[in-house]
Image 1 (cartoon, rainbow, N blue to C red):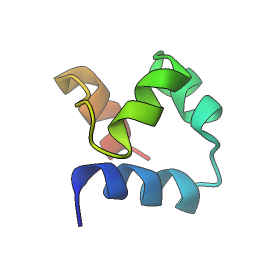
Image 2: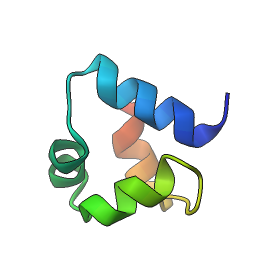
Image 3: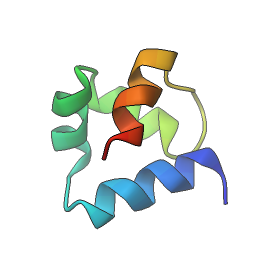
Image 4: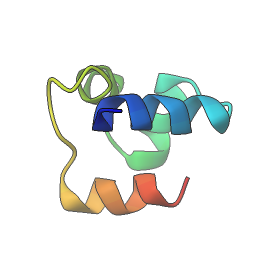
Amino acid sequence: MTFGKKIREARKQNGLSREELAKRLFVSRTAIIKWEPYKGMPDIENLKMISRL
């Protein structure tokens, strides 16, 4: 499973929309859209926040 798929799975398991996850991570919804299909990578601080989902 790719990193992007793991983000998407964690988001869905927590009942979050892309917009809700973006707000929690203080990033744009566009960033989440890029991460999920692995077109971009979150920085280390966002990775830490994602790991707490």
